[in-house]
Length: 374
Ligand code: SAM
Ligand code: DTB
Ligand code: SF4
Image 1 (cartoon, rainbow, N blue to C red):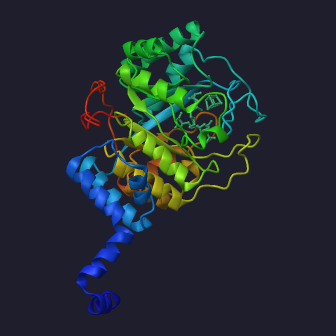
Image 2 (spheres, rainbow, N blue to C red):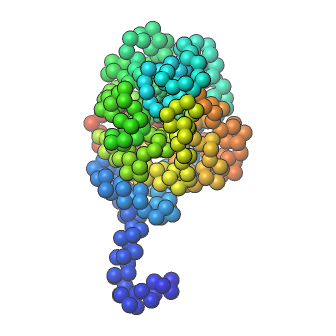
Image 3 (cartoon, helix red, strand yellow):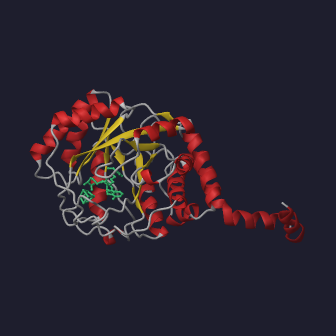
């Protein structure tokens, strides 16, 4: 305060305010604009970078304001993952324990039976989860008609249990997206993973544009889009900004944005990456919250490594969805009792399932009702 007063005396009020705002105002200015004007998809990369680079406590404070304005603060969606077809994948995603190119000790399995999948969904529901997400280690679903039809049946059954249903099966054609919609699928997860520029360092077997095309098929079928990425792959901060920029400038923002912290699995090319820290997570979550205010921001892989106080700051920054259950796809997740305790200590409330119709294309960016979850 004394410093500000003496600066004011020497430089005048205006000059001091201007210099303070130029260093710390980006998060404040953009968050205020988001609160005033709602969603926009005309972000420049520089704008997103300036939010991301704001002093971390400023960024946290202003993303929390946006979060409180748009969402029921403290309400957290619980999703459960099940790997219905594990391992043996042809792709070379360098983070992934399920790629057949890396020796991670994982045994490839066939598609899980209906009974086993429905049993897992029932258990997840009983444990308080409202969304069930089935993952398959496939490049795409082309030429897998029998398995795909089985999955359509799983989707129908799980939906009829009163749960939201999500799938992540690799690249999708338009027709397959329509069939999944018809079966009652709530959301489809397909991550961009990183920036367009860094992407070729991580995956060579399919392109960034292939991924965007799948997202377009999902959107056009009227299924909610779930798309985010991973931090800790060795990318620069500029790449994290690039990922957020691509997502936030899609014609319609994804309804959910998973933020994964790399789980460095032994045997993968990224096994020795240094762990992501709390400040990197806060910057990523808070920036996502300001630029895509209505999205569910999902604290995804890597959560098991963060303490309860760290997770508390992520919820404050704008995360409002988690994966619960003892396993993600192939790696361990947080303990059920630890999550129960966290909800109690932090005063979090579970979000109930939502079955409002998904956004149809050609609406204004982010025009969906807030009750629609992604
Ligand atoms: N095969 C499908 C695909 O690639 O779209 C679906 C499953 S894939 C495992 C789903 C996502 O999980 C990936 O896009 C990636 O973002 C995330 N993921 C996989 N392995 C991970 C790891 N070791 N750490 C963090 N996220 C990971
Ligand atoms: C997402 O973004 N993260 C989840 C879900 N979508 C499919 C997957 C995380 C996988 C972590 C590594 C594993 O357990 O195999
Ligand atoms: Fe296969 Fe998906 Fe893993 Fe890539 S991320 S190797 S496509 S399972």
